[in-house]
Image (cartoon, rainbow, N blue to C red):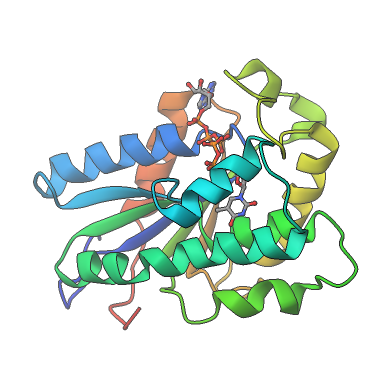
Length: 223
Ligand code: Z5A
């Protein structure tokens, strides 16, 4: 199902490492849902939203134009999600499905992977509590250590966090946070978590995502 019995839209999250294909797949899924359910019934929200003032600070940090303490950048990423909270809720409750291109799991995984002593997992999660919970999380999985797939994808290596050893740690953190696919089996409740093999070609990944979204029996609970 792609809508709930209360006719609210769904909150669908696509997560994964850099260059896993999230932006590509968010757009393809959105196009398919708009075709199936009518134009405008779905939209994509990129996270971070680099257009806000906080987003511009994040952008400048990621481009290594500014430095910030690890704690400060963590809280800015979270603050950027809080800026989006109301518009996400407005969309969902007006019946529009929102596809998130990254969200809370990225916030926690990238900070945890830094291994900073005074930023344990509880500290990292605390500012995220109260944000809307996705109905479905699709984790686009690639193996940086084996496939070395990212370097073959356009533009990899341009930004601060795109270093292979770091990506290996981020992947392990994602798995700890999201669990093994069963609801609530990870540290974070991100709804139903489904792992997608993102090493396949773009069309096959899109078909796998479409099937996963279609086959989900999503609850109509409050977000
Ligand atoms: N970050 C954080 O620390 N804390 C937070 O709270 C959040 C984020 C939210 C920027 O994020 C950084 O912020 C990121 C995490 C950190 N770390 N870094 N660097 P971002 O989402 O803005 O990152 P991005 O640089 O815009 O996107 P991305 O993740 O790197 O890429 P992607 O969306 O996963 O991939 P894509 O743009 O769809 O595809 C990349 C290329 O690969 C493109 O040429 C595609 O045509 C190609 N591609 C895609 N799929 C395939 C397949 N299946 N086969 C072959 N080629 C493919």
